[in-house]
Length: 276
Image 1 (tube, one colour):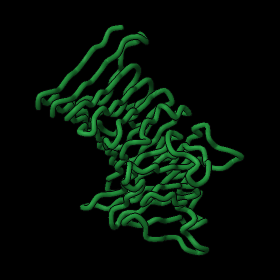
Image 2 (cartoon, rainbow, N blue to C red; image 1 turned 90 degrees about the vertical axis):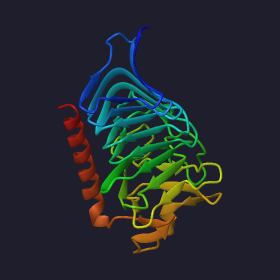
Image 3 (cartoon, rainbow, N blue to C red; image 1 turned 135 degrees about the horizontal axis):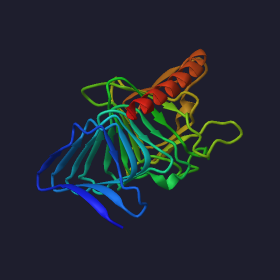
Image 4 (cartoon, rainbow, N blue to C red; image 1 turned 90 degrees about the horizontal axis):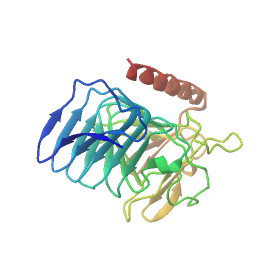
């Protein structure tokens, strides 16, 4: 097939910040490819929609910036080196046939929500990576794992190597949701989240002032070499506990449905906006 390539390397900048949508070639064997390496930068900070046969390769020292973006079909994002920098200035939405692959210890920075709809766990290659949710408002994070109990999953299963919530200079709240059925709901139970850890590093880091809200989602995190079922840390009537540097929370029972509905409406609104 034919590859149409846009490359930034050697410290160069390709400023495409005014681009709002990208559509790749119609033939399945052809690709539009964006490549950054060697401290090069591709700025697509205004990008809202990606359609069909588009691939991003963020290589050694490369810097890729996307906007409030919906990858609506056949998009691949490859973060290929721990020195690679990939971030979005808004939401990242991945369609059922789009994928992200991140090498061990590399970081994906998302400043708003992170949604995925695939039922193929190999399409979410984050189990050795860092997902940093570092916006300044409530961020929604989709979960998709099969609930196998504590330490029942050690890789794959829509898990994440390390989840980082907030940053030292700015607090955020991350709300876990199971809006999309990623193929792992069992007997009406919500899907779950596994945070595997990175070598000796904890699976969950919450910066001071930031909060991770579990809702009805079971979360299992490897902390200081041991698995912890985060939901088990709450006794009756307790809605907040200090953990991993910040706060773990569960919403009041009356607010759970409202939060889930709000998350769904917000996601749908952002997807509509991405097609404008």
